[in-house]
Length: 170
Image (cartoon, rainbow, N blue to C red; front, side, top):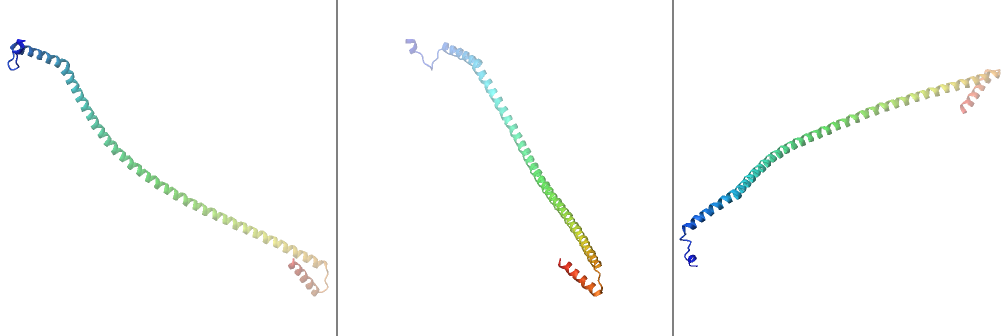
């Protein structure tokens, strides 16, 4: 024990310094070879991955801005197309309404003309029938007058007036 009692840190033994240095160098070599290199390699890999992620994020951000611009352009085009379609639909509706009104007026004019023609033809048929009836009545009157021989003109006139009165009452 006497040997350990003389040991102090402030007065190192040259053999201890040499062995401590050798052990430290060996430890540093082993740690550097098997620990520091993989750690440094992992850190470089991580740094590379982080840089790639940042670059990818920057590219994604630029693509998002481009997509946003494209979306705004598409929306503007869609709004323009919608307004154009609405305008065309309104024009088509107005055209169809005007055409329908025009056809309705033409059909109404044809119907009115057909009705006038029917009325005129019925009027002519009625006049023709009336003329035929008047002619038949005149023939009946003439036949009756001829059958009855009248001696005087006054008797003849009285008989004609009587027949006309009968015809008017019918």
